Length: 217
Length: 217
DNA sequence: GTTAGTTTAAAACACCTGTTTTAAACATAG
DNA sequence: CTATGTTTAAAACAGGTGTTTTAAACTAAC
Image (tube, rainbow over all chains, first blue to last red):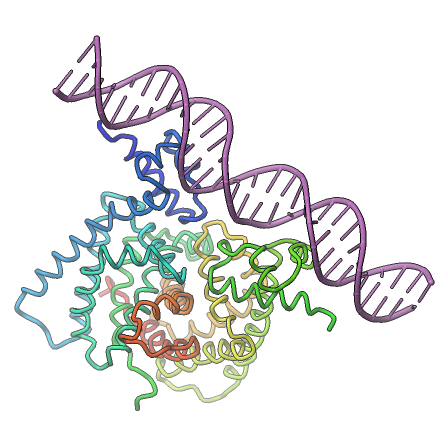
């Protein structure tokens, strides 16, 4: 194997980042868990930032690619029902399936994904956010563009905010599922995987997307 | 003034915490912005954790109090419509008004509130979460209990998850509004205050709460 | 076998973190 | 005045952080 070291670093970093976040995870704990020399991170990835980008790119690439493909085939399909909710569910299902597709090969990727978006938006001046929009903004906007057709009764501004409400629901649910499971502790229990959460969210997002706008009537 | 120092610390801490989060904000920047000696934080609050709790308690107390009162008067009101969505909107409106009530006296409190919940749930083993549930769990559960009545067509487990989907939508939207405004940068623009976001979210949360559960039919 | 790239070990760097300590000055109530 | 609590200044502590460096060992290809 030519790059066993880099892969071990990426794997360990992904687990730690997903569990404790980017800031709270030190390079030393990553290299220790990966059983790799401390200097290896800076040797291969330049810096911790570089490692974070590498970790995210590893699944964000396939994710956006899969998403774009699925959206393309959807757009080419002829029949479009008059039922907006039905079409919205199809679209959110495509998003969910794309997430599940990358989660298949990479168990912690969804948690990292959620954490990434969460922190990218949480810090007001986010270099992460710029990297995301620059690298994967196309797929992002493509999805938004198609979604827009089935949320016609609102202005662009209202759509913008509504979209991010949905994004927040998705991101928070995925990134804090561990804590939620820790809370119920067997009461409501029944472990719910990120895949299940995503599938569960589809109709909720569809309904939320169609909710009327108050203060208009 | 007897406690001008502690108040200045709390004010400065609130602004910094809201803007950069708890971990990314150092005690030194707080004391500098508050124009207070570095040791003052540990003198008055014992530790940084104590300061965080003090900052959150300052608005979480009035918030839970206001919420509990409003819920109480709601429960006492006789007429209850058969329209679940209408009642749900009333309930979420109560929540929104309670938030706006504390935000009135304290402009950054909502951002801190959102960030608090977000970080409390993000770290898997959260001492913050325990403090929250121990201190304000009553109001929390009270709200959930009333809400439960108007979301009858689901199991307790489904309700638990659905509730946290809504919570996530709320928390993410409030805590990342700055980043969202930075994105659109005048395109969709029109500054939207946290109060407006909360009000905007009421019908969305009501719809999301009522969304059907897939895989049952 | 030489060369180039990789990996390791260990140490050090420079910096930031929360916290503590010492001393002196200030405030205010008994 | 005295005593108690507050505030400041400045320094230091102990520990963690990302990063760099040095040297030696290893691996593979030409």
